[in-house]
Image (cartoon, rainbow, N blue to C red):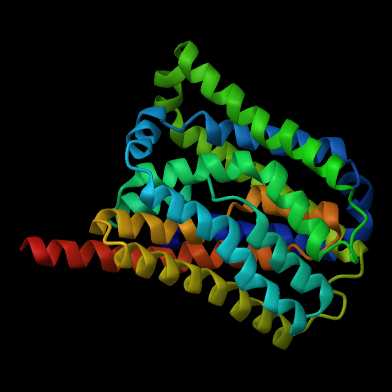
Length: 314
């Protein structure tokens, strides 16, 4: 029992952080309103994730870009298009939160980890992560302006500048530090850096729950609505994963690249999604559910891929 709890501590901590923020929204409203604090946490987490990216794997993927381009296209265009119809079925704050999920970039950590576990080419996941994170300074403000303009007053240029300073810049600094001789230190301390990033994510979940409650979000939510949001979020993720795998098979990519495209095309980063949802005043719940869903579903899928490869080798 204790081992199972320890293995799933982050998912449990997400639920606890959200619950404390939701129930104590009035008490912690002043703390959550400090946008500078949120931005500093975002910067630190993106740096911690970025310094563990290995550029040699990225160079390997650039030599054969078909799979990476396919994953990038689905992640940046396909997933937002899958989220857009939900605007007609879910309340505005939830639909807006789910659309934010579609806009944010690929996750810096789990996409490559799950790809590697499934026997795929993790260099494709890495380059998808890098490109989508760099491109988010244009993709996110444009998508917010086109779809959520009626529900948020966030200025596109201000949002673009914020993403540049607190998403792109820490990644550039982190990779620069690797080139300056800190690559061995980063590789040795990858577990600690990952733990630090997870703590930052928990703080952002806490802030997101407070801000969502202050906007009136979740005040009338019930089990049925949360279930509907969960079904929508997980359906979008699994649909994107299947589309990535099928299209990679159609263009006759090798099996390891098909696996990589499926994971990289469908996974989204929690940290940036929380920040955008808070800034736009929409619910952070879809982003949390999507993240938890991709962790759970992709663990099962990666295990199936791995077992199938082992049986073929046998």
